[in-house]
Length: 420
Image 1: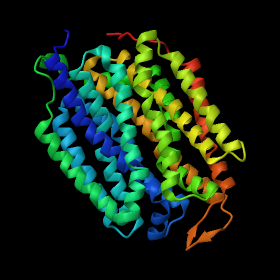
Image 2: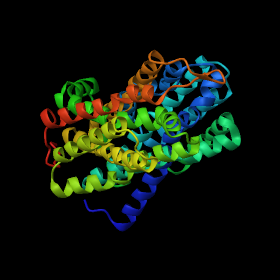
Image 3: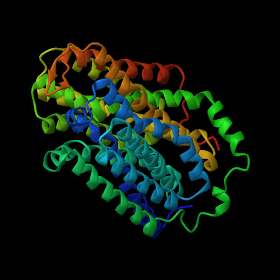
């Protein structure tokens, strides 16, 4: 059914309100990247323990993706996004107010539970309020908005940390979460008036259909690609990129954050266009190949070519971000491969793979750094050399190449058509 102008305008409004929570969630997700030195100093931890503490966010986030999808298939975005924003606020308060690494990890864990509902929630609203033709474009647009949130958690947040301190900045983020919860409760609607309940009626045999989703090889192939494409962003932009660039170029926290912001920007700006191009081409797979090639090539250059000027690395980071933006097509393929009544569960599973990169790769890089540490200390905090960072970060081109292999050999083309 073709949407009227009034219906289209209302759909945009609902989409933007839900997106505010996504922007907020991404800000708190990457916030540790601009306070690594302060966190190691205040909690008396090295890189390995910092990686574990920060990645607690991704453990709960990843674990909650399938439950979040199931809940969205049974309940509306209004209630779930309201509760999710409140949970993020509680976790942020825990993180800001504690003096021990264990309670800080619990705070990150609670943030991850609430954040698990953000990206999938916006996609659910996009699927319910808009015509299906727009979905691939809206996935890309959602990724762009997520990147804007991550950017707010990079350079601007770094400036806020300089002014308020890292604890003061986290308290401010907790207050913003409470405001967004109230906004979702008052404004959001679960579905448009013309969409009948029967269309969204939850599957009677939910576990059987969940088994079908998980039992499809395509589900796992898409998940591996999603993991390998967005994992580098979580590793570099969300934690280890800022201290690496500070050490390599002897620059400030804010300047290094600007460079990682360019990686996020590259990952967001091109996302809507990729969905549009895919729809015009009636193809998904060739674009997945392009993304992996761009990401693997630029990351290899950054980590292996010496004497690259700062502007050159900034350009490479932007291009790496462009490479990651192609993972948004995996959500369109999930939509193509599953019934509308279980689509949220399928997208939740795919988004779980996206964020597992944080749970696995952030502490892995921290462990490699600690294992190869030369013993340098500054104000009681371990300091790592450029070569130590680069050895640990070499995991980035490796996982890009894994994505390329899966896109070439295992992912099937849907020709932008739903199977149902």
